[in-house]
Length: 138
Image (cartoon, rainbow, N blue to C red; front, side, top):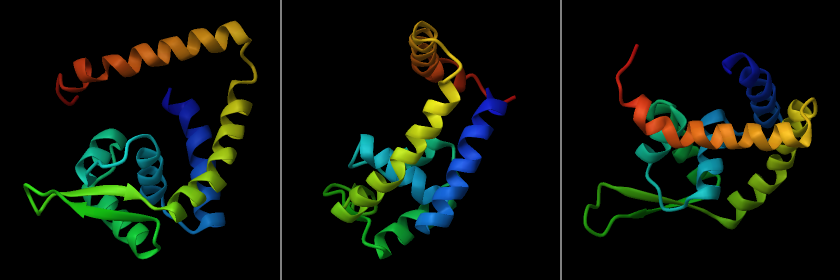
């Protein structure tokens, strides 16, 4: 899986970094916020596997660029919830078609039935992540 994903992710992220001037942690943060706003940096780290220091730097950079905003938790002022701005949504809308095209090219060798099966298998694996990921490190 890692071999195949590297041929999808690495060239895609390098191109986004070059064309749009944002780093991988910034790219990942915007992707996460597209699907679930109001998360914390720790949530993004847990989802993406990126180091907290890298995500924190990415969040600071996105905030400086006006692509996200933070809101303090009313019950714990140290905790910050993250939200994408309109500018962040606009940037995401500019680079996500490129990722979708690359995904389409990657899956082009599969029939429609194989793609449906593949998506079901990925959904099943994703749902199972909490069960095996907490089993401990290798």
